[in-house]
Amino acid sequence: MREPYTALAAAYDHMLRHVDYDQWYRYLRALIFQYMPDPMLILELGCGTGRFGAKFSRDDFEIYGMDRSIEMLRVARARAYRGFRIFCGDMRSFALAKRFDFIFSVHDTMNYFLTLAQLARVLRCVKGAMHDRSVFMFDITTEHNILRFFDGRVTRYTVRGLEVEWSNAYNKKKRHIVSTLEFRRGGEPLGIETHTQRIYTVKEITALLKKEGFRVLDVYGDYTFSPPCADTVMINFVTRRAR
Image (cartoon, rainbow, N blue to C red; front, top):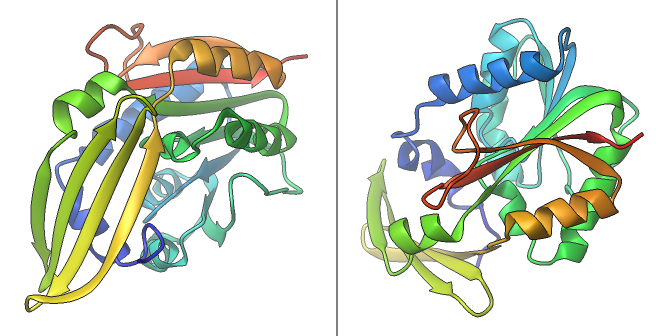
């Protein structure tokens, strides 16, 4: 059994090739300027292979990307040029000397923290990297998304000879989605990664944010500027530190 995003790093960009990162980036930029008129310094938590960092850097932003996975950062290293810098860190236990104008964490990274206590640790670290006007934006995936698109699904990929089988099972009582990725080459097993995420409600997240000293500016659905609804896939929270 391997740590999540170990063997997966080599196949990650291929498996997500359907994602329109350009459109996603345009949304993030629009959101930043809606709340922060003159952003200078950006931090991405769970930067993965660096797709967003490279785009922000191209547009002359100074951006730092943090990820726990060394293997994902090895892929990101090829994109870390100009104003994009990467480093390894755990979202539950980081402290930075800089204060960032905009901090974001997307693609259901926050769902990897399986308890409210773990999420609280993340929020405390984030709060320490913010100034009074900083904005922290993050998403969580929804139970609707899991039930419609993931539970019971098995998907297979082949990337440069690496065979990946991705299966998903949802425990509704625990609200845990468990994704099992089996890796083979030439039919020979290479290892297994298990990814577990927890589904949270808007009420749970909003209460935790308030408890940890954050003010919720807006809650959007699916990377739009509209509120979430019953068939929302991703819920987006936009927050500031409470004064």
